[in-house]
Length: 75
Picture (cartoon, rainbow, N blue to C red):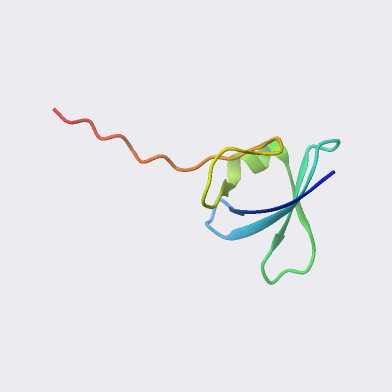
């Protein structure tokens, strides 16, 4: 288990704070503002539905994605 403090947005744009990564269970543990209990998501689902705020890369095995600007072709 690895303690973290990283911010992500879910698929609806709502921010969450990732507090822990559990490699043995492949779960990402996070907190939602205004909700006192820990939430969790399987890694595969988290990778599809969450995007890190501010940076892209990998968070201890949790691959993050940043939105890339759409390419505009010019003739």
